[in-house]
Length: 346
Image 1 (tube, rainbow, N blue to C red):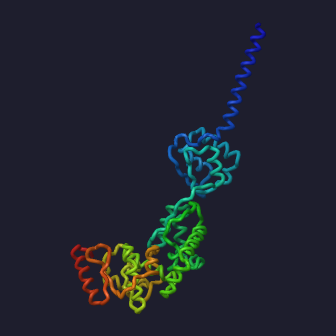
Image 2 (image 1 turned 135 degrees about the horizontal axis):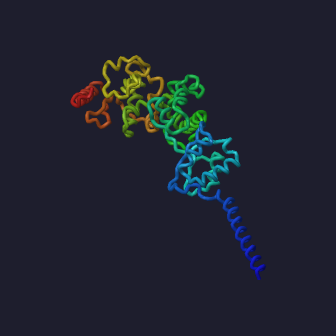
Image 3 (image 1 turned 90 degrees about the horizontal axis):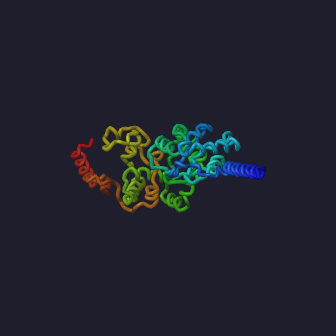
């Protein structure tokens, strides 16, 4: 009886340790399928750039995970060699994702795209700064390229017309796109925007697409009121047809690089610049901002009228009084000047 009891004890112990070993092996085999984030309640993004190494990647991931999950991820990294081939990108880390999914995501460079909005900004330096905040590219690299004559020529534009390439809209892109990829994407969007219908309208006006965008940039700076833009576009087209100076105040601000000016004085009009349309006839050499789509379409479909003059309304509504004759315009201008004086605006 003692021998039989001893055998049963050995069998029980063997069974217990066998089951424990199976549980341990199963746990080790399946732990990589456990959720990566135990403390994370909402989705988060990590950004891996060209300067990152495996340690900095772990540092970015650690706040989102438990130590156990990180240990499991590290074993996968060591086994798969991800540390030798780190992929840049913007990665979405969701609470429900498994450890193995996170590993595959990082190793495969399966990043999450983002929505990039090209703004209606006034200078390429400002555009570079805005892109710097949205993309892995740094502002210095973008600004240097967009203010380089050879680079602009390479892409079919001049230093003055390069703003035309950037059609203000929202695009789906990848955070780590290169400058070359950015320019290719902008070319694609530019070509799609300037379809045959728009090109035909521009040709009918005797303007190139770049000239349309240049005039549209002036219209945009004259008013934020979209319904009024076709009227202003028609006015400037009337002046161009008659060979009159455009005399657009926003071009003077751009020439001086002082966008805070609220009142254009004679001293400002003396600024010698090809952008000063009080001094030089015709359109300036390029846009004074990235023109809006509404501004471009206003130039392509201008209001038909005989207006040659305009002046901001004295109620500061952001709209304008329009006039056919100089005499009528001078009356409008006097009312506006009096309103400025009453408010102490210099």
